[in-house]
Length: 376
Image (cartoon, rainbow, N blue to C red; front, top):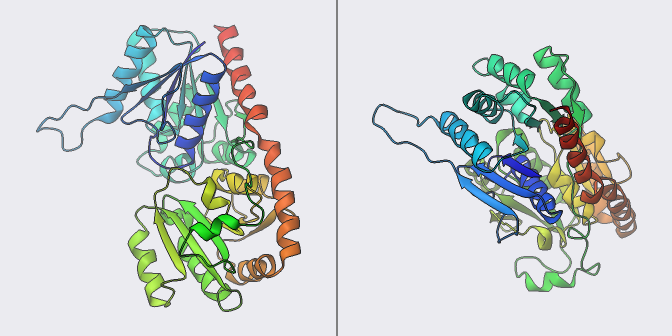
């Protein structure tokens, strides 16, 4: 099978899942063609059967903003024909689903070929904005197939856009053989000079957008650090970085909060973690939390969105309203101050992650593709 994949190549859950899905499909012998303006960040080495097709942007004085969505449509149409694609799988609704629809019209094919996977903020934030609402609704309805990364997102999409189109839930996934606790005794902390052996480590990884509510993580850690010796490690970068740095300074947390910037390999960081925090305003799924669970790290996350389907409250972690600072502080102290609690929840976290193992989830995508090919 020849599969085309379009995603945002930057750091984030949708791009990570798309890249990992392509890698897994290539391992199974399928040809995978990524179509985007940049190489997805997860593709950090050469893979057999994986090809990258860059979308060229036309620079012209009349264009204040180069029309990427149109250039993407043209490239999609080109690759569908030149590589004889069986399926074009787009991740994140806008503009990828709209571009895929236009690509089909450009080459004049009527068969089922493009599948859209909805990830979260493409529905709750971008697609729900008045300037994108109608085209997002249209693009979803015109997709040959639609998958959602959680039941929450499926129901939210139906409610927001008032559509009855059949959508299938296929959860995000993690390679549990890759994401696993390598050293239970945390001896590898000795190689990190800014973390003491007796520090408890709280971790957060994201693209630092306002929806992630990193300011609430700082508030929680500020209270936790008064009771438990530890460090907060923040991985990533984005629009809220300046705000968060100022907040850390104002609360005199310098030296206790470590800014790691963007890191491609997060497994060693998860392996030194005692607690992962993701108290977002909303999460379509929460891939970074799943990766933490797989490394036996308990999670404190948001009760708004699809994370409820990933983290078992009271077993592999805790989920609260993202504004409930007091409950998050209490839960964090409970986990960090008791080794037995931390170990037990870590074991439950690992068990939960195996429910989302890539070996179970990836075949569901393949089966979904085949369903549409059989209809063609």
